[in-house]
Length: 286
Image: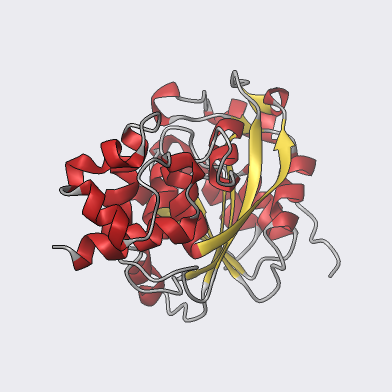
C-alpha cells in the first residue's frame, strides 16, 4: 500500500509551538525522528483495515507514523492535557482517522471504550509507553479474564532491561515473574533497539521494540491468580530452593510433590508449564 503523505510540520517545531517540555513525572521522552516512528508503525502492521489503540502519544510522533502508514483509525489515549492541541492538529490533517481520548490508560476499561466506538474486531496496540507505567500496562493487558483478549497484537517500546525480562528463557538471569506471565499466554519477540539519541530528552538507557501476540490458549492450564501467587513467592526469594521460597504458600513440600517438581530446584530453572503445574497444585491443596 502506498504511504500517505504527512502534511504536518516537523515534530521539533510542533513541540516548540506548543511549549511541550517532556515531563519526568509522566515518564515522557518524545520521539522526534519521523522515519523511526514510521518504522515502529510498520512493525505493528499490517495496518490496513485495522484500528490501532495507542497509549501515551504525547505530541503524536508515532500517531503520525501509524496514520501515514495506512492505519484505518487510531484511538489515542493521552493523560497529559498539554499534548491535546498538538494531537488535534493531527486529527485535522487526517480527517475522521484519529480519535483522541483524554484519560489515564491505567484506569480505562478498554473493552467498554471499544464497544462505545462500535469496534468489533480485535485492535492492534502500538505505543511508545511511558517508562513509569509500561510494565503495569503490559500486565493489565495480559491479565484479562476473557481470552483471547481485545487485542490481536502488542507492539510496544520498553527499556531494554524490561524487554529482556519479557523474552527471557528459563535458566537465564533475566527470567522472572514477568517472563512467566508473558510467555504463559503469548509469544514475544524483541524486534529492534532504539538509541537514547532518538529521544528528547534522551533517556539514560537503550529502548527496545517488542512484539507480543496472544496464544489461542495458555501453554498449560492454570488460573491467573494462582500463577501470580506462585511466581511472586518463588521469585521473591529467587536465590533459595523452592522448598524454602514457597513456604509462604503453606506446605511447600506437599505443593511441590503434587506438581511433581524437585524441592531443591530454584525458580529460574522452572519452565512456564512447571509454574502452571504449581498453580494447579496450589488450588488443589486449598
